[in-house]
Length: 500
Image (cartoon, rainbow, N blue to C red):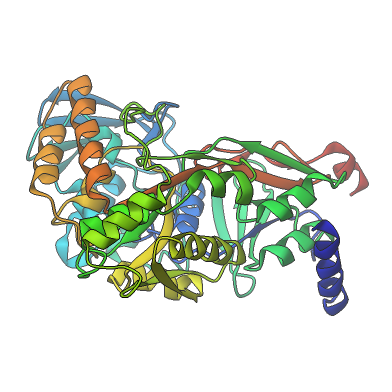
């Protein structure tokens, strides 16, 4: 296996030029896809969200259990409908030197709440009735309904009010108060940032092909990569003495999404058959080489709203076939479905494995792969029967409203599969109106039980996180949700600095 891989790497090497980093002081981070939007009011893809965390400050952060904690602001609950946030001192400065104020916070959230602006994050914040600036450090949020978890919803990156008013293009020229500032787009798929604490420049470089990404790391053309490699490539890197590989269990939820407005995937018998026709344990063991753990719901059991009590959808091809027969399909009338995925080779390989497993229960899967932008655009527009994606960096249960409430259809939400359940809608409202967090967690677990039964998503696994870095780097720390926060601490090691 590795011999064939090395041969392919050698072939690519012979066809490639001898590109080297133009600036040896620059750290180059290889990523699988470029960010689609560096404006946090509109960003929904994982790469954009991860980079925006570096460029913009947020009012709150989260602890290990997913509970909100102060980011750049502390808060008081003055009444069930009234929260007061106070910016911590010293207040952060935007990268142009201006000090972040309560007016900037208000302008950011008011823009998202304005229905005409079409922000996909509006549905999660629709309970805000009024925003009032008290003074430069203080801002009040008045709610239309009580919600004890309200602070956890305030995760938007804060933009400067003056640029919001002038319709500044934040995607092309991001300007925030985060640990990094935007410098330029050096070329297609490239993004140059500067760490504000010490001036260290980090270039994010899109390398779509994972084998080429690995090759560039081995040749010194990039210094760091994270995730988006096949287990075989990861195994090869672990054998390289000049590369450091780190790994940790992850919390990002992988799933198969289904279009419930489609007459086939909208049939619950078919969804149950698909769930029982996928051998997740075999995929985790052989494809991921154990670098994943099974998932039954969005939140892992260690999250405060997670649960370990859901019965797994075990691999049971006989039961799956019986469900298909009940739905009217069998050897004389096979079920044919379309499955969309990105053009990433590993995701294509996963699609082929799923295709093979489902063929054994009488389901013919036609695979369609696209570049990331086209693929994600189709998913957001509802142009699919089946697809596979992961939710990354999800910390708060308001995600249930965002992706499963019947009124959270795109672009105002992410209910891309057109799921509608009056019971889930009712429980979401009840949970958000419950002050007692234990009672609230109970409501969310009830929601998870219904979703687990209805299967708007077929749960798959939580993939482990891993990174690979060159010898000249040290200090990079992996996050369980795959965020790039470790870039705040990564440095060139002492030997490298002395050489320069």
